[in-house]
Image 1 (cartoon, rainbow, N blue to C red):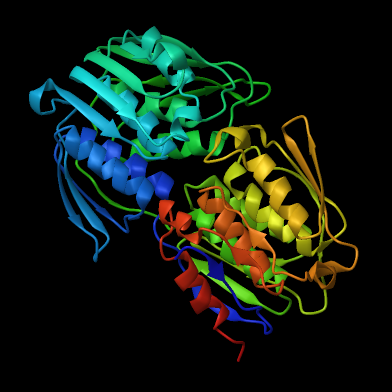
Image 2 (tube, one colour):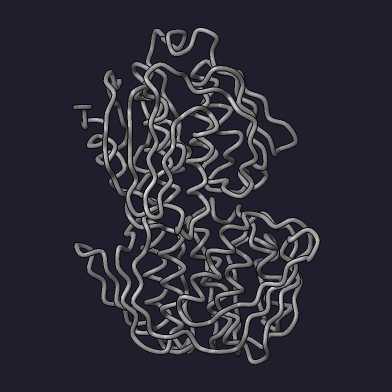
Length: 449
């Protein structure tokens, strides 16, 4: 599917829906299962580009996986912390999956042998030096190419993970910290991580620690007694237990369907399997839509967004530093709100699958919005004064996606409101949600009764 052309949605809809499993939880659970002492059964596994490269990487590292795509399950034969690929070395291709290259780099440090991890050209522009530095401080021999210090490819000459004390600052990705935490129980010396400064995307770190606890190793989190900010994490030595784990639906991908209902007056959607008990911080996007004027019911394991038929959304000022993967969804939603929307906390967007700040500005301008970027951290969106009626063009607007799945899925929302919008190279959704456009078609077909 090179391009996607959607019809305008001219009727309100009511739907109940559950997206496929979470990419973040799938790739974390796969790593923890591989480290477990015994067989783990994972269900509701996401099968997409980012998880396929993780599965292939684990196979190259010598793990036995039983994969059932139809049932969405993976049986992982854990090896209790042993990493010994055939021949004592492995070259692992990680595509453009940040979780894969970061998590597997840390995983390789537990082994004995030589490992090289690399990806597509865009991956070589995504920094990984902060993780390399932490692993070096914990006693690992790790290098980069001289002409690209701190960027992939990564070379690990492993003799096990010595462990000890390490500091972690406000880095561009929380995945560096998550990678260290997951492998730390197998270090020769207990690992303590001192946290300096405000933490990036902290809910993802909390997700990692909760998942570690589910697999039988409980990190100790120490907070500042006055500010309650996280200050230190102590990871006890131990082994993960063989576990059966059902992966939640993906909260980031649910954001598109929540926003879809919010921008179409009279529409209602219920997302099953995500609610107050979710491990994923991105469920908080439902609260953002509520602040814009959508009605919200937030249950234990579901959430419902209703767009009142007689009320438009209103622009808001919001900090998304704890859930930056929803920034593109909100940016497109802001096109259909009254007034300006200011989105803060976006400093990590420049080092994602593309420079998402610049990409958003370029494509939103095509749809008539006024866009400002401040301090490489803040996006200010003012929709056209005359709304979508002012967005008609002699030629249909073509939205470039920059090989970024979230650009395609976010701007698909605009295509349901603005006549003729074309999403270019729409197959990039295969990175995390191959059936996105099929599911979108099913949801919008659910007319109100």
